[in-house]
Length: 219
Image 1 (tube, rainbow, N blue to C red):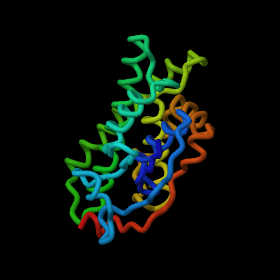
Image 2 (cartoon, one colour):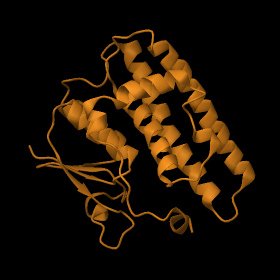
Image 3 (tube, one colour):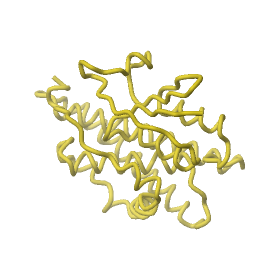
Image 4 (cartoon, helix red, strand yellow):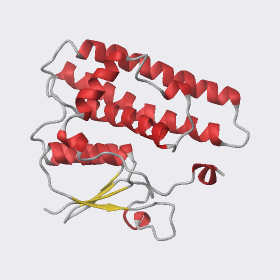
C-alpha cells in the first residue's frame, strides 16, 4: 500500500502522524502544502481544509487524531497504545492534554499578535497553558519512575506539542511569550522530551520554516 502524507513544514499535527508512520515501519512520501495559499490542494482531500492528510491507495484520512486512530486500527503492530487498561487511560490522558495544549498555545499566540488583544481572554489562555504544563509535569514525574515504559501516542502528542511551541518561539513564528518557555520550570517534561527528541523518528521529522506572515494571517 502506498502512502502520501500532505503536511505543513512546521506543523506539530503533521509531525505526530509522520512519527507514528516511522515507528510502525510504514514507508510514505511527503507532499507539503500551504492550506491558505492560492495553489493549495488541501480542500481537494479534506472537508476541514486542514492538514495533515494521509492518502492511501484506497482511502483518504484527515485530522491528525483520526489519522493516528486509523493507523492504530489498521496497523496494530507495533502498538502505540498500551493494551492494559490503566496504562491505556494514562496514555489517552497525556495525548488529550498534549493536543489541547497546542490548541490553547496557538490561540494565545494569535490573540497576542492582534492589534488590540483582549487582556482578560489572554490571561485565561495563559492560565490554561500553566495548568496543562503543571499537570503534564506531574504525570511525567510519575512516568519517569518506569524506565521501561514504551513509546505511546501520549508521548508523541506531548513531545511534538512542546517541541512545536519551542520551534515557534525560537524561529520567530511566535512572539516571545513567557508562559510558553516551558523547559526550566518543568524538569520532568524537559527530560522526557529530550529523550524522545533523540529517537530516529523525531530526528527525521524536525519542523522546518515555511512562508508565513502571522500578523497578516490574524488580520
